[in-house]
Length: 577
Image (tube, rainbow, N blue to C red):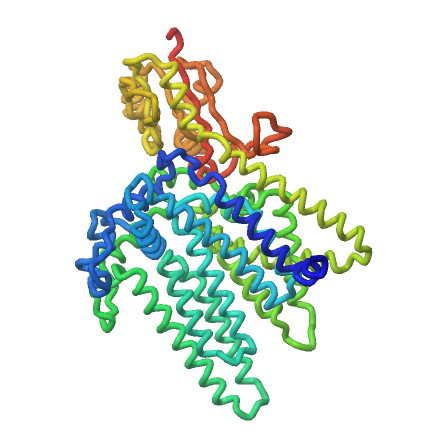
């Protein structure tokens, strides 16, 4: 047994890391107690519930009649990839979980499984471009990153996209010095086709793949081998195979992107193009679309950097990543006699990290999940950095102490984040309070573009409440506030179910002076309402139980980081009630 453990030590570590990643991603998948509180997930669940498996493959591939085409089942605006929905629908049919109230759990499990797959890919890629110990560090670091953990709990397309982009990177670095160039370019094309079929934004990774092929061409052009012409032709054929395979598998996954089911007709579907243009219009600084208001006060580059370091990665992991990037730049710039696999893979990883980060970081919409595809690459470089750091320590005892100490510190934030999934979501807890404390016939508020309360709960009969809908996102005018004041005069209880409205409008006091003043008076109790209940859920340590040593107040994080699975909910009663 002792010899077995010694000879299989790295395999045992990998299994433990995968189990750790699985715990973080699969624990608490029913985080909203079946209430469908993630709007994107809710939409995808509606679409996949409406899907029906076609009678045959030609029917599936024909966008005009396919029953797995969102446009044919009542959804004229659809900008996500189809692959996550297709596989969810198929498994849902096999397991008899196809209705709206159950199929999203299939999607959540698949989302988690694909992200666990990234952990295993990090091990494989780390071994290929560095060494096995570095690969274990990389796999461990990604397994504890909080944004991947959170996104794995949602039935959305992000983890599927992330997996296939990283799988494409695996096949790309596998092309270096391989005997099977053409077969691996085909595998690269299949993977990238699935990435495009998960989300069209996978196209951002295409320049990295193109740079990889340019490097292979350059390498053969300047080689001194006699058969270099044949190898140049081989690389060119490989590039063609990659493009052809990518398009084929994209079309196989997302037939509605094309006008017909004829594979010889490559005309793009007009509705698909229209949807993408409409989506692009939301990323406009002049947009008054309510979800866009939150971005008007954000600073390019600095806003996403802060959210990534403090919340997506958390401290001190964010600091480790920053050091790793600096160290990788040093390694690449350092003169070497032979071009190494790490120099090739590390350079492409750096270009992807900086390219996507700065491109997305200067956009109007800078939501955290748009930066998600760089997280595995950050883990890859960070694992290499830590491995080099610990290799410089000669004392085995000191090295062990430092490894255990660093791992323990790094685990604090992800473990704290699991506290969110150990108890009912705040909107469910608030709903129970409403059923038990607010009288029948009361008039309550509903801020548009947010979820209203109370939610329907088992063992609680429907509560007869009147509701006044408040639209807070229009810029302040006398007309807006005349309407709002008329409604507020009728209100007994004011519900705020997240920071969506006040978190956006109060950051623009020049556009919302009266709205800002209203919210301030609401929160400090100087207005017509007083706070009677507040429900919060923060990452807390230790995550289980009611007593905690400390909590991370993430109210200042980007809206989407808190609003889905742990929003702050407040209830205010009109004074005199």
